[in-house]
Structures are given as C-alpha cells and as structure tokens.
Length: 284
Ligand SMILES: [Zn+2]
Image (cartoon, rainbow, N blue to C red; front, side, top):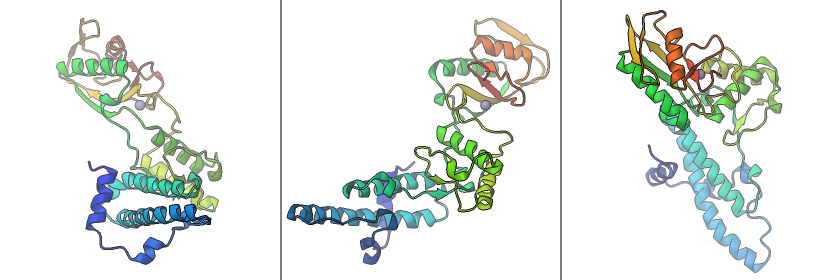
C-alpha cells in the first residue's frame, strides 16, 4: 500500500496547478497565520515560513480534492492523517496550538469502515498467539474447518462503536463524549435528533446488538473470534500432545470436549452466553 507521503507526492505531480487564490488564502482553521511579524528578524522568519506555508497550503488543497473523489475511500484514513499532520506543521510554524487546526468530521456511517478489526493471529499478544496457532493447527490437522473473523480490535474502533451506541441510545449527550486521540470525530450535529440519527446509522452499519465495551480482550490482543466445524469424528492432539477423539455434538466451537482441548492450549471459550465464536486468554 502507498504511504501517505507517496499519495501526496503522486497527487502533487499529477494535479493541475493550483490557483494562487487558493494557495494564499489561509483556511479558516489556521486563522491568525502571519500576524505579529514586527522586528526585522521576525519579518525574515515570516518570509521563509510564508513560502513553506504556501506549499503546505497547496498540499492541503490537493488533499481536499482527493478526499472528494470516489474510488479513494479506502485511502481516506491515510489522507486524513496526512492532512492533519500538515495542519499541525502549519500551526507549529506559526506558534499556534494544535487545537487551532482541529477540523473534526461529523459522525456517520463513513467512520465504520475505518480502523478495521484484524483477522490475523499475528496481531495477538505473543503467548496467546502461540497457543492459538497451535490449537488451530491441531484442529486443521484433524480436518476441522476453522475461519478466523476477528483478533485484535483497535482502540479507535472500540471507542467509535461504544459511543455510537451510547449517543444513539441517549445515555450520553453528544457534546459529553470524551475525545479519543487519532479519531477526529464530531458527535454533536447541532441538535439531538440529528446527532442521534447519525450515531444510529453507525450502530446499524457496525451491526451492533448489545453495548460494545470500550476495553475488551480484543483491544488487549487476547481474544479471537473463530467459526469451527467438522464432519463425523474430530481426532486431534491437545496441548500436551495427547490424542483426543471427539464424537460428541455439536460439531462446532460450542462442543464441550473441544472447549477442554482449547484450554490445554491456553485458549479459553467465552464464559458468557451469546458469543459463539469468541475465545480468549481467560474466557472474558
Ligand atoms: Zn470476540
């Protein structure tokens, strides 16, 4: 995947020249730029950073255009990150605080595709990963089918899911949602109905059925969701190398004999109901 820098460089090379009007005009979020240059030294510094600011502002214009384009939606998070870093450079050049450049984006379903869960065991905490990999390998050797749907959940996603649910339910006012670093979201649409409606659209797109936790074994890299099935009898080795034959039903991850085998690998089936694919370090 292209890095932010590559995307921006490519975009600058391909794009048409940007009208000077756009480049010289400060965006509203960097208001105050260029003020206070009185002494000769300050004037000089202002001239230098003025040229730098100009090129940064040009990059911003290009990024804004790119973000409007269809077909680049999967690059949105990267573009937004790059955009934010330019705004921060501009602010620090002009001695302004980061809060000046924060341009948040309203809540809504566009957030749902960002910060995806991982489905790779490589993202798991090391000890748990070792157990999970061995357990899955053992099941597969016994010809079971194992499909991993989720391992690590980024904190950003947990935050978005949790507060989308709370705002939609009305258990928290949108203006009271605490900020999350790296998630520049505006929960407050100016009125309660619009704020709740946008949050509900996120809840629907995430397919949330009950309140998602802000912190869970998934955000700690200590949980895995996997769908397991097999035909007839499953013969596999447990974590101590002992052969186990499972004739019982159901032929799924809910099978109590398989749950015992999982434990020998340090992979514990969910202790709570209603989450069939969930396993973790301790069943939480
Ligand atoms: Zn889970």
